[in-house]
Image (cartoon, rainbow, N blue to C red; front, side, top):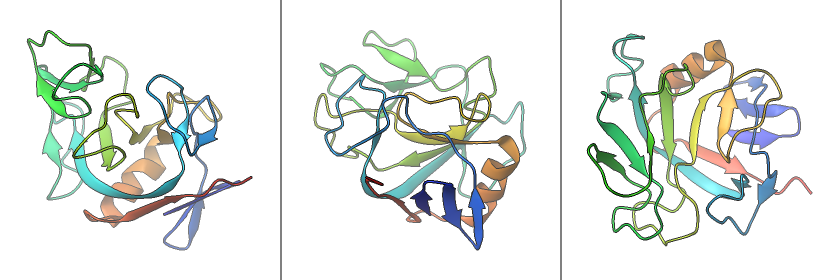
Amino acid sequence: MVLTPRGVRFGGRVLPCSIGKGGLTSTKREGDGATPVGQHQIVGMLYRPDRIPRPAHWAKPVGPNDLWSDDQGDSAYNTQVRAPYAFSHESLRRSDPLYDLVLIMDWNWPNAQPGLGSAIFIHQWRRPGYPTEGCIAFCRTDLHWLAAQIQPGTRVIVPSLA
């Protein structure tokens, strides 16, 4: 998968996408809203079994207690954790459909450095052109198509496009 000015190029297609509201950056920081430049890999897939069927044999279901730590002071920063959880976190089971299907990228993972960004995912967009908090987002149809095509280790190349 390669990010281009027109979208992500993969499998002979170009899929329109949204990136972070902070644009692209090679100096990613927690809360900057930017999508990190670099060569990343897909390291996981999560899905809501109460909303969608399993998108791939290696996808893992998320439940109401599944969270993602975004607290720089947490030893589990930038990893999946479970509620109840005292540190700052993001729910992986949202009321909207954005995280019904999530592809986890290896940005600042598995040995996260505090402050260098967390929860950099590929997920469903709110609407075309609406920016993310640093993730890459697609329409539901394209996201599900991608999930059926990729494997763990699939590369995600985010060039600076400058």
